[in-house]
Amino acid sequence: MRVRRRLQRARLTKMRRPLGDIVSLTPTGFDTFLHCPRAFYLREVLGVPASDAGPTNDQGLLVHDMLAHVHMTGSCHDTSHVAAVLDAHAVDSDIMRELVARHAQRCPSAAAERAAHEHTLARFHRMPKPMFMATARIDACWVHDGLLDARDYKTGNLWHSRVCDVPAARVQAFVLGRAAQRRGLRLRLRYEYLQPEIDDDPEPWEPDDDDLVAVEEELRDAVARMHGYDDWPGVGEADACRTCRFRSICRDSATPGEPSWAVLTALES
Amino acid sequence: MELDDTPRVTPSMLRRADECCHRRLAHEHRGGKTWGNRVGDARFAVSNRLSADARLAHAEADVVRAEAFVDPRELAPEQRRVYDTATRSYLQRFGARPGRVADLGWRTPLPQLGVELVGDVGIALDLPDGGHELRRLSLGGRRTGSPLLDPVDVRVALVRTAAWAPDHIRIVAVDLLEQEAIELEPDVTTEREEALAWIGERVDTITRHAAHAQPRPGNECGTCAFVAGCSAHG
Image 1: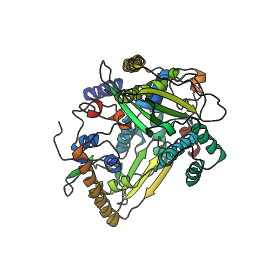
Image 2 (image 1 turned 60 degrees about the vertical axis):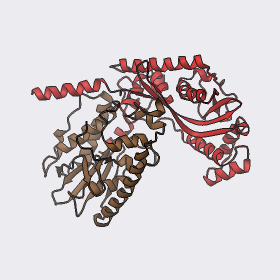
Image 3 (image 1 turned 135 degrees about the vertical axis):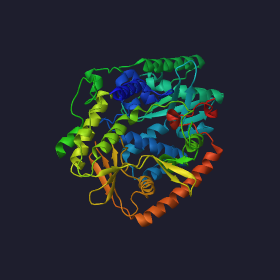
């Protein structure tokens, strides 16, 4: 009996500190945490499988892949090259050509000395505690005119008029900022909205050294709050919960229901 | 401190030795995370608990004990929903397929390669008809198009089960949330030999990459247990 009690206590104690010594932060994870700590906890910390379908992003993923291929093997300004790449991947459609053309209007590759595509950067924050490791996959970076010009391709809704207001951009700026500083470059982070129905991109962000210090402190503060949570509260608002991939099973969901996998089980039985 | 300093290889190392961070590979190959930073392991809580309870359910040869699956009250409510669905799914699928659990442990020494092959290959069962069945359970979360069982899983399973199931084995991989399953009955005579040869080649690759231990900062830094002392994060 005593052993069992000890085991139960050990299990409970272990569950009280589910975070590692170094918290992993990604743009999506940070954005999720600010919107709903419980969604972050379920997805990033506990690794709970999604109980509900989210919006599909197949077209977005495809255009990211195609733009990387187009740039790594030629130029986005060369329409025959673009057509050949799209054709080789069996995705040569009007909409894909239009998305690539929309990018080409803003692509700085002609003036660039160097470029990288679909590249993941990592940056460690050690002191002051708590420690965290930020990682971000950057769609494209070009070096030109003393700039590290980083791009995030978008095919979804436009939510912000300035990149500096986007939570995910803080993590991107944090990892890119050091890369720019090491090369003696200024950082510019731009969100490129590729679909034709969005006329203007949000205002690009060129954070200076003070901005980057403030960003680091903001991320550190968020990680400190994570360490302080025992309960990981959910936002519990219908508008936010409606599209959450844990909406059916989340303890704090405003739109609870039956998870998609449970429905399958019920059908089989 | 690790008591045994035989280098270890895991399915993940076998798969990703070429593209992963070679510094992390070197540390993991040498064995143990005792001196590393603590990484969060809560994401394995449900699958570990499920596997442990399923093993308990198969303590006897001729019956599957449903009562071995006990509500894991120490877990978060959402994890308990996953556990509940998975156990119901397990019992629907395997409730009438008993077998006595065999203990394969976590590692298999491969002295001819100078390494230990480490990792849980699934629930090993001695079936009432004398057969051997290996059940690999997963709980959703796979990327679109990812197989339930890839060739590395099969090779590792074949090598790790060589002593227990020398002549025949059935491998069953099931996603208990997505209701997908696959069953294989590999030709153990030829495929096990091929698997060992393939693992030998990969061990050479792992050893070569681990020797220079060059860090490659990137996505996996977020889950690395060896950040301290890494030149990429100095």
